[in-house]
Length: 178
Image 1 (cartoon, rainbow, N blue to C red):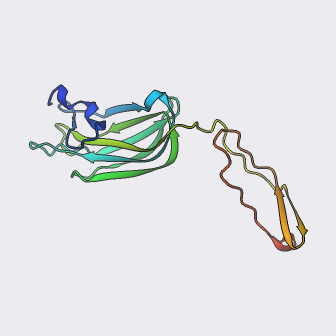
Image 2 (image 1 turned 90 degrees about the horizontal axis):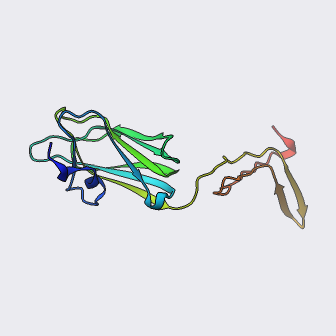
Image 3 (image 1 turned 30 degrees about the vertical axis):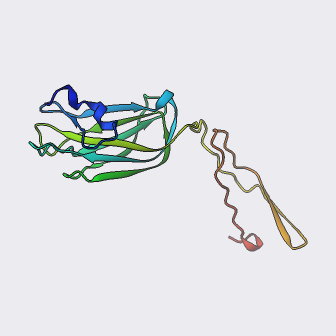
């Protein structure tokens, strides 16, 4: 539609006023991103800024955001509809870990062409994903009372996947209650 000056590189240049523009009469448009040095990243949020040029409206509309640990097996992280304006739309990604992201623009408000101003992802680069999911423990707890202090020992939960076990909850039921 506009030529080479409106390519995908404009989506991540930090300037919502520079923009990506589709070709005429587009179908779904896919953009794949990897982190520096092919690192893993813990993702907290993503923001999309819509855009339309003076001849518009050419706003993008339906989108999907996918994540993958290996660049192949993608999992849907977010989906939605962008408004027909340039207000930023921020999506929570809940701390998921990924090596690559795939943004798919599925439709636009105008069937002739679509535009998008910026795509930003927030979180922290580094770390590794859990190779093995944490295992919930079972009733392997013991308590003792010494000088009025209760000491609880617990075993059964484990996490060998690399990120560590975040927490363990213990519940007390008097007299073995139920």
